[in-house]
Amino acid sequence: MSKNLDFTVCRNATYDSVTASRGNFDVLYSSGGSVGGGSSDTNNTAYGYNALISVTPATGSPFPGTNNVAFGVSALSSNTTGAHNTSVGSNSLKNNKIGNANVAVGSQALFYNATGSQNVAIGSSSLYSCTGGSKNTAVGWNALLKNTGDGNTAVGSEALYENVSATGCAAVGYQALKQNKANNNTALGYQALYSNTGATGCTAVGYQALSKQTSDVAYGNTAIGTQALQNNKQGGHTAVGYQALQNNTTGIENTAIGNATLYLNATGNKNTAVGFCALRDNKLDCNTAVGWQALQNCTGGVGNVAIGYNAAADLKTGSNNIIIGYNVQPAAEDTHDTIIIGTSTHTVVLIGNGSITGSSDKRDKTEIQDLKSSIDFINEIKPVTYKWDRRELYPNKISDGSKKQEKIFTGFLAQDLQELQDKHDMKYLNLVYDEDPNSLKICKGDLMPPLIKAFQELTATVKSQKEMIDKLSAFVNFN
Image (tube, rainbow, N blue to C red; front, side, top):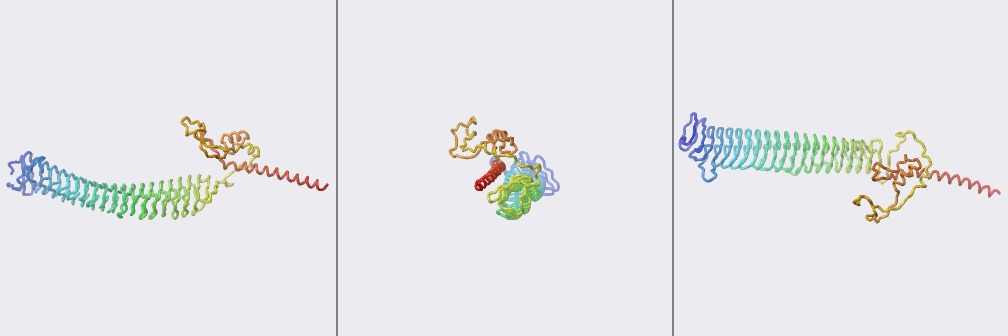
């Protein structure tokens, strides 16, 4: 056979017409000639004992069994008609027969591949058990070791190690997706999605993110951050941040964005936390927290909403509250059915029965004086009826009555109140909110003090007049 070779380098080797190589060290190269027993195949290169020993004669077009490179003991030793394969390492692609365009670098890489094509295995025993899977990429010791599925990517020692037939998975990092058996999962990081077996459509980025997830129903989870959703067993979660939702087990459909958000939540459902330590200690359902440490100590409440820096951090067991503002806190840790809006020092509270309260503590006020006479001011206020005819409904932003509503309302005109405040030097009443000059607004609640003052003045007048009438009556009756 050697007459068809451009060169043959052998040590302790003999050749006959059937066997390409027998011995410890063989180098064969063919250019228009052949490598392999009785072969007429072209452009094969073999370097190593039993490398490419089984390649068979080529027939048809394009020629099978051509353009293979095998370096190492028994590399591509079972290949018959597979073409365009590259095998570097002892026993790499050893059992390949008809698979094409595979690359194996490392001892026993793609060892059992027989029919799979377009695989890349770099690392000792990478894609070791892949028999017929195609389009897989494995880089690292034992990466995709047991794989037979298609279209998987593993970069890192033992990444996707237990994956057998699952497809469309990507794992980057030591032991990422190591025990995976389900489709369409993505893991990036040391032991990310390590224990996942049956759940599909999960994404884990970070050290041990989703690492202990084992349940088959824990589908569609996204975890980005060290140990995010680490202990999870259910689906529909999004966790972004260091240890976000780390202790979640059976809770479903939670969203946590920020370090340690929903950290202790184990069984709570449908919670949303955005901000450092938001809802950190939460254990129940349907709470929403947006802001640094918002609702962080809530353990027994449900249906709460907190928005703002440290908002409702003192709430523990209260439910159905809405708390909005910088460092705004409830009256008690078990407050229920209350709306609080403001800041840590100035708040407006709407209690469950419909009452509205505002901060008015004497200890927070100074330069306190009696309100001056308001009766003339009140007497000049003009209550009116009107129909809305909003300017934004018109292209030129000028209303002409053609788009008016039919419903009649009662109230005041902001411009009238503004004019009266100027006239009576009572701007301090702040009845008109004029931060937006294109849309003046009225603070109706601030009418209460001048109304009460006017009522007191009328009462004093009536009382004085009554006393005078009583005296006159007594005088008349006496005479």
